[in-house]
Length: 250
Image (cartoon, rainbow, N blue to C red; front, side):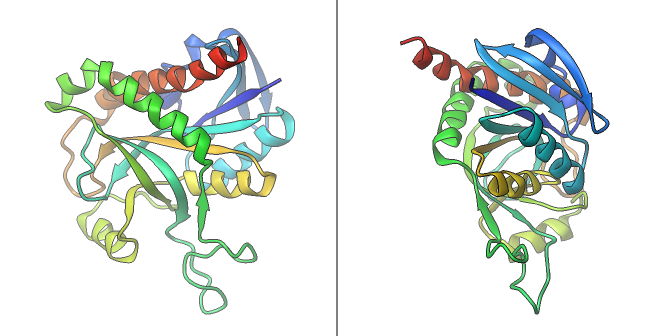
């Protein structure tokens, strides 16, 4: 059995996806609800992780230890910090890093102690599939353009995570100076990447950009979640899983 695990930090990021799961059943473990069923003909398990790196790592470990997932897809929203990354755009991670990890001078800044890694790579093949799914999804997602007043682009690159909500121009600029190739900032992805690395599990992370992680809020966050991020996330998952279903049928 090939099962894809689908994780988001907040219920609102999963709200559009859960009703699409066929023959869903719910199991409760570790204070979390795991939705098991089928989506696009594929076995899936979906769960809300909660916010922050510890919550995300616990959730990923439960998924990988108890639900025999063959790959993990983390989805949701993030703040855009890279040049040219606009509100409404989509970022698919090539690698993930904890921007608040600093065990220096014992270890280099950002390196996770005893792993030798600061950047945990996403699975290339699975991320390629997710990126293709994102391209196909945004091409048909008229609601984003209607709300934002512009089209949506898909970016590939570094996503950084930390246990603080980055919401000022000063914080964003500090991140850009420290990590000039970072495209987006959020609070969970790098922790999930570390857990997947420990288990040898393929991971992809896709984030819709809800803000520029600074002092200006250009779009109502609740409206963005319900009208853009949620439906777009579902469309990306459907597109990413559909090729697997087609290949399995041959």
